[in-house]
Amino acid sequence: MADPLTLIRVTDTETTGLADPKELVEIGWTDVRLFPTGWAIESGPHARLVNPGMPIAPGARAAHHITDEEAASGMAPDHARALISPGPDYICCHNLAYDAPLLRTGKPGICTFKCAKEVYPDLESHKNGAIWYALGLGGGAKQMEPVHRAGPDSWTTAHILLDLLRVLPVETMVQISANPLRLLKIDFGEHAGKRFSEVPWDYLDWIVNKSSMPRRPETGRRRSQRAPRADPPRRKPHRTEDHQARRGRPERSRRMA
Image (tube, rainbow, N blue to C red):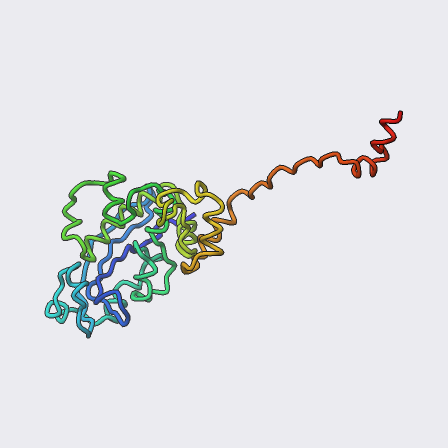
């Protein structure tokens, strides 16, 4: 159970690209606090440009539309990290595995992507904007604009977090976020879209033991969690003369009697 006034800082980043080395280009956050009346947004969205000290990859620019010239006017990356680190009890991101190494807050982390996959496994998409609309969290809120920018994205993620907090304690969310993503559905091949519990055993055995695909620990775990495959029924032995003899009832003796 979270303590009163617990603060979760919902954070989002825009970066120079996916490839390493990468650095912050923009940082955004929205604060969610546990008030006596329950969890609610305390402030935000906030955003600051960050000077990454390196060029922004074209693919990243196409997503967030921040130019090298705009980013050059921003604060140093370490100053941005120092801006968000003090204060919160938890850091929350929609893709914690990507953002946490860039933020380096040292705080316990919550990944709304993993938690949403756990709570809402059957959604068509688990991107933060798709979850927003699928759950009816709101439509066209001005704080969501422009899309693919750190401040608005943190606002969207904060609302997903609030919805998840209705069904999951903070401590459970932290644990889910620390564990590998639990795969409930298969996302490739002839059984794509099915739950692993619905996939034939021999297909799972092929994935884990015979295919050349990179091994995914989650797949092995799902396989081990399925009910053990029942052995085929054993056929009753045919009553041959040898079998009858072993039971002390030779066929010849019975005929002679």
